[in-house]
Length: 536
Image 1 (tube, helix red, strand yellow):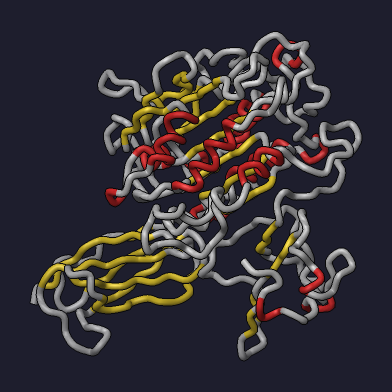
Image 2: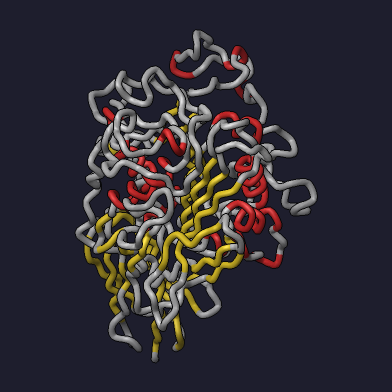
């Protein structure tokens, strides 16, 4: 990347802005650490009506404290924000873990950005409930274009496919930077399809980051990954292309040797109840007793069968959550792994925790179970222990934790810091909420119903509903995938609607007898399709 941009050489920063007193692009080597770039869209129609968001875009809700729009008293409905990492924060308040601190050792690698449930990042939402500070790096979902945290493809990896994105670890020492800045990485995905959210360069970078030494008793290095198809994609080789680094991340880092693309329950079991031994409040210093359970929503896009995991051999990896026993088989939903990677006989460890489902699928009857998500993150974060003084005598995974996750971690008892090492300094107790979901469930759901009558001649009705207002398209295709007719292409309010088709094509002709497919694109980008038949 060129800096300053070629079209900005000699130009001033826009709007009279300055960065650390500098007003010209050429005066900046690059935007400084902690810089935040916020932007919004404003549209005005011919009648003077205004909107500050586009209904065709997923609401980001990225900014915790939405600002007032420039030169206005209007509170921003939505702001898109880009941060130069690592972030710089206001010093934490007295009496909390973050007193006087301006940074965080946590990186949230958000690979579910374009598929958030109700457009809220479930990881950020749960972290905010806990009062935990974390940087966030958003990923594009599984594009195989090398634009993610690991940079573009390695030389010779994809001949003719080298993407002009960010440098990879062979070209720039990003691993050393990440190893210095962050001790904890949280990866959340909500992928649908065969591509991995973590591609070859991402996987190699994260594996080597995880294995980087922290020094004698310098603290644990921990990674969490959740996502339906996340581990299936890492263990598989899509399109017949070898993915050794993705395979190595799953096996060596997460201790997951094999993955099935679905647990053994039938498609009628849409809401399996997970028994989570790791997140169990009774867990620590070993796994829990199996009384902590929660449901998953397997109806979206439905039926979602998640991933069933098989751990590697040895004592490092343990089955840490299970699906319901079905047909006398109990599939594994999560694996925890703890090992020594810095070749020192000290107390800190390298720790990983992987789930075969997305953290945002922890919900039921349309309600996000934010408290459950917070519990998983709480056990993960409080089991990742900081730099030791040498007084501790053992390592644990999971570790003891105070029963009240919304307490002040700086003063709460029960963490066993003297035996297992101190917590990382990550929580501002003054910002703790009680995990109340600020986003109520929608009154409607995204649904596409069967047309009626079917078969039809001369006309049919296609009922559908949308959960949130926004742009909707309903299109008809023939069996060869060619577009025949666009029935709906515009904004619709939340609720129940119908589209009608009389067999006419976009060009004005009449469609012949046969089978056709109709597809809807909802405001949040999800798709549904069904087939219908014309009988002339």
